[in-house]
Image 1 (cartoon, rainbow, N blue to C red):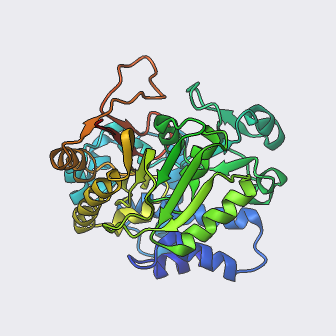
Image 2: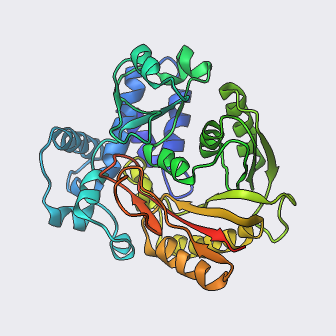
Length: 370
């Protein structure tokens, strides 16, 4: 409990709880894996139920009350909709996003841990790891939900590159992009490479992917992950989103998985509910429009550009789409198929959320004229 109290007292807008937790667990050498998992569960439960437990007189009692609420909720005890709308997210967020009751309910549940196996290896991996559940969407044939207690980063399968930890909605984004072997793609905001590695698998490690990010340390981690996964059809380059593009290459497909407020990750990262602001949303929305417009200059005629964000706010989703459309006459909306609803008509944008079990995400796309 002392570890949890330390993390909660040190967490702030500039020191996110998950980062503080990792540092504290590293400092506390000798902790058993189950102790580390219990500390993490307590920290995240506290931030999910923070507004419900404020009347408890001490921080320790608040933590205990939050854990009790989490346990009851995960066992199926309902929470009134009025309480969820009043306390689950800050008031500004309630005004900025189209919250549904199922999404508010999902915010309070402990999140699933999703894996993405290498193509054709899902069933064998599930048998080896145990405690795995397959996803119902046939299109996402590499996805597994892991419910066991093992440290997956220490498994032989992980070190052999047989799977990645990747949220289900993020996996769905790669499927929507649908890159083909031999094509040339650009992951413009690649970060540490989760979606880039998926694109490569979908391309059967053929063709070429440019992966860019503004931070060299993220690209270094991407290269390490790619080496473990035996992905070789990529190049890395720094790009800060400026007008000078990182390469003269023209692309069949571009993914702009843009920096965003992360509202769609608030189930997994509940501390961010209380540190993200409306100003963050406004600033990021302006950046997102700029990134899409600039990256689109690198499309081949007929090439497609995909815009993806793990947020739900209107300013960063439908408003960005409208501004890009108004600014780029050469971009034509590109209808998308939903892997979770294969019988539905293609739509200009897709929302992934609680019904699928992953983070909240938004995806839209355009095709370059010509």
